[in-house]
Image (cartoon, rainbow, N blue to C red; front, side, top):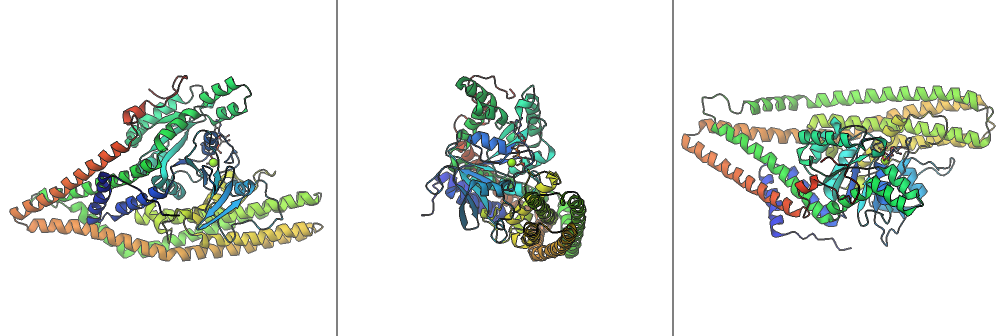
Length: 632
Ligand SMILES: Nc1nc2c(ncn2[C@@H]2O[C@H](COP(=O)(O)OP(=O)(O)OP(=O)(O)O)[C@@H](O)[C@H]2O)c(=O)[nH]1
Ligand SMILES: [Mg+2]
């Protein structure tokens, strides 16, 4: 396939590349690189809407409603465990075709197999071949669907688990920055939460198009209107750029009722009431042109970099302006430098301490969770094994298998989260942490759904959904972050260990309870050893990445602050004439930054679809007959 080319206007080119040069000259390479990467992705990417939100807000239900098909599994007990891309049908993937896509691999699968990855296999037959994922981990699930409301657009359903502050959601945001817009899903039952607002503040740096859907409107007498008004007020305060973004109340439940209605008139009425067509209209209008949306994100990233540079130059001017006797103009920087140098001296010790703590807590978790499984299952076996049929026994052991996998996946997830959190503290930014922990990086193909599966519909209720979610998410995250090799260890072993148990039960059903008890204890002990070993291996593999990452980060920071301090020191030695010259030079730089900032802003303005300026956006959407539920 020929590599796609993106044509940009001369002005856009100047805005993007001129800004890149300016940023690089001042050591802000990260923004420049992000913008450049974004440009590359924009050339190759289809327009996409990335659906994000806290857990159980109704993301998957909304994806189904917008597609008009049941593509994403939805259930109170099932957490979305992997990224799902709903793409327009093509010759490669015709309608209702499913595929697992991984790093450089792509495999057509049945819907059943895909759903097993998405929500942990409701239909998986126990005793079958070991599930995929042990050796080769797929990237994400893809389905082609002739979308009812969004033909031609790609919709990405993401796992909510771990919330918006989890590293995987940051990856989703990263994806949105490259591919299109964010559809932020909140719930009519509550106003925007602090993590949601923090997420949006960060998203504002690199994503231009954000649209809000307030779900489950059917549950509230006012259709979520009050909550929506409060959301707007919160946005104005905390993420002002999105204060006027389109926000619509929707109901996937009503859309479902519409689909089931026989009477055409009732169907149309319910559909309209669901506000799904209205939301789709906004999405089509804002995101259908993938090239513009991608370019806008690139420009937004450039603008954010310029804002940061302007603040930096402003600091320099302050330093230059202060009279020599008016105290130390760069005292704050000097203190920051002392602190950085202090950190430079001790970060290795801190790192070892933190890794030690992480290991300790993982080992504690392993012990606690496995003890719990063992005790509960000993009880269950004593109660249920004797009178069970062959099918019952197979079922019972399959459940045990699921639980053991969950423990392994939970441990992997916790470890993963712990590593990201720790690295985030060392780098002062989660994004940087995710970046460092994603070795070999860059390829979003690293998106990996969890290979862990579970059977949410089997009786017993021993599976805590919260545990399940974190487990599934954790492993998926590990895969996405390129740590799969390290954290997949325990899962492979669980497959081995627990499948042994399953086969054991299936083949030797007549086995006595005591033998089974012993096998359970043995399996749990073996798993404990294997999990602890895997935790150690994961930490071992991460350590060099972290060491290099922290060192580079600190060196760059020290250099940056040192430059400011040195400039200030030069200033104090300067004659009045020299100082004036220097001020003039910085002012010229600042003027260049301002000019670029204006140029970028103009390009952004030109890209926005006619009629959807911020003002027009506030009075969205087009809703033909029903009174708008939106805040006036
Ligand atoms: N009444 C009502 N219930 C809804 C609506 N949308 C979703 N739900 C319910 O909310 C629950 C969660 O829905 P999901 O679509 O699975 O939520 P999700 O955000 O995808 O969940 P995760 O992927 O696990 O984070 C399900 O029980 C849905 O039936 C709606 O519009 N109205
Ligand atoms: Mg979901």
